[in-house]
Image (tube, rainbow, N blue to C red):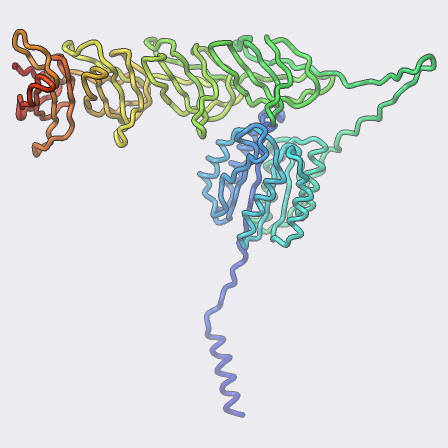
Length: 562
């Protein structure tokens, strides 16, 4: 008995001396489903919904602890009328704030509202995790892809997946509010009705705090009662005839509100925000009668100098009321006096690299807000289309873009005026960044460090690498074309089949070669050490070495007498 008690006492002692084991709380996950459909171009209190959503999400992410795992999905932001347009822009994991904000800032609303499919995809994402998941749906409208998201959420909740589903309506109508409220109830969460930026941030903060600080979500603040249902149509039957008199809803009016720089377009039209279907087309800037509904604006400034542009702006037209169409978002190009009117310039989508709109004149132009590449083509055949800068167009104001970064090749008097082209290349890949065929004149180029290449003729010479240059932003950068070699023929000597200028490294090993055929013209070259070989005819003579090795200093023309 004593022995047994000793064993028990020893066991208890060992348990007391063992290190304490900490049981980690289950990891929390915040998963956002964001509305990027075409209707997000609508306005709330005069400000674009998408801009408010981006600002609110930026603030929210900056205030979220980095140890909270997050995931972000967007729908309707890449293509008109596509119910499969759903993208996970931030995969589930620890929150990388800078990357997440960058993705949110790049959202450009375009298409439909596939809420059901987005919810299903979100659940597939969280199913493989063991996280306690909180899903937040932020939408400004109702499902438009034929499914019932309330039934989908209820079915997924009943499957036993560990999640809570909240829904936040942003400036929604009564039918959308009813559907979003049903989704939240089916997901065991709460519905928040918001009508401005402050409301949206407050709602999302409450949800975030319920995850971060394990706070109980307070009931959403009381919201205004939804507008009353329309009164039943009353029909009156005349005693003197069998006709029935009814009162139908009439059209509304659209009035353009713009600054004086906006000129009357070739035409403008209204389309369905999600499908892109044309609903009405007009000319001029006058007020127009329009059937009730929600529309997105398409603008074509001129018949030949521009093409159709979806402005993004979404307007809601009500019967017998006037809706203001605010068109004040523009871009103005500012250039030095030497820049001539280009063949065209325009805005390029950052993700697809497609030019969404182009213009000929450099006057102020109406454009959608957002981030774009500015592209420029100086002439149709004499230059390529260049990406000059990444720009941010702010809504409801004119954004000035200064284009003054340029490169000018300055030739010495011995350089032939005619050439095939000159270009700048990427220093690592040697791919062409910009090519010019209109002789030696300044051209707008992007800032950066590049290789400068000269091509005398299409068939009778090869590229000559002249050296590197760092092009500084906003400056006229100059590159002197004053280093080269010229062969002086004897009287009556015919131009040779081929002259080869061979660049040598410090050890005398051959590196680059430049060929010249059928001419004794001088050849611009990079400063360095060279060897020259010569072949008079293609078939009846061999190749000889004219000069075994010589130095070509910068800024000099070396003449070799034959």
